[in-house]
Length: 359
Image (cartoon, rainbow, N blue to C red; front, side, top):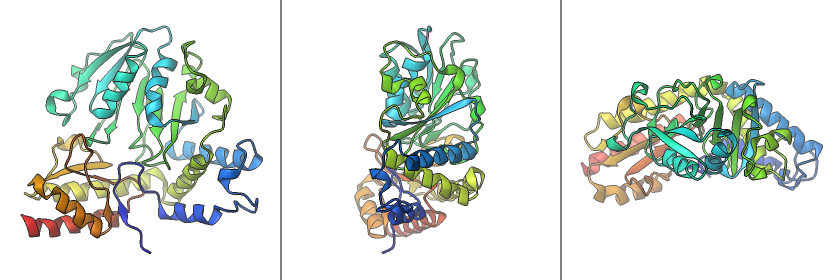
């Protein structure tokens, strides 16, 4: 049975090699007679899996010993609360950049714990562009500056890392490991797993160690970064199987040549798809070209009445989950690391065929 090309924004496609390895190891991991999901998280076997995953992640992402790497639960959305609880310290406010739905969710949650200063918003443009930093109204006394480098739903992505006098915090859920990144520019990076890391339920947090130990006394133990760091992300039973699968993804990525090599592939995929859309009078993308997402490509058809027909035809060809988010409509192709270039080629071939038939 051939696998479909899954363009879902998340939970997203996983590399076939990873799923095949997990299948082979499902009932008996390396002669233990157990599945990984049955192991004690305190066992030597699982501790070895977890430590290897962290080493591979650090190598791939370029994370130095100045940072703690935490494998936490609750996805990226739990971090919307954890960040202000851990980083506000004796400050009363934090700076946030509003570029779409996920940054708005982060802002709304942070307002529960302190004052939020929205330094810039893309709302006036319909979230199709990002204002230059020279126009941002940053507070030099803020506890941190938070931004969402890539808005998964709207397809708006920063093409720069903001300069910041205060710790820079980034939600890299949809772009983590998709290309090289200078982690040293950040105070904290967090990333939900279900796009480029592994299955849902897991979130990886990279936090500079000097930022640990500043949590509010009201911080729940499970959201305290220092507690997580001091306990090797095992204060309680972690998402063991998700952690294991993430480790397999890291090993797969290393076999592809690492983030530099996969970044070249991702750049080609995005260039092909946007190039086709731009050359067509039938399809359109609303984002200012320099801020187009590499990972999430939204597009509309010339006639919305054709959306259902387009999706039915796509599914019949094994091109799945192309419907846009319910809040914005249209179509969206998410082309994360595990989406092969052949998947983008197949999508373009179908879009060409559909345009000829319906234009």
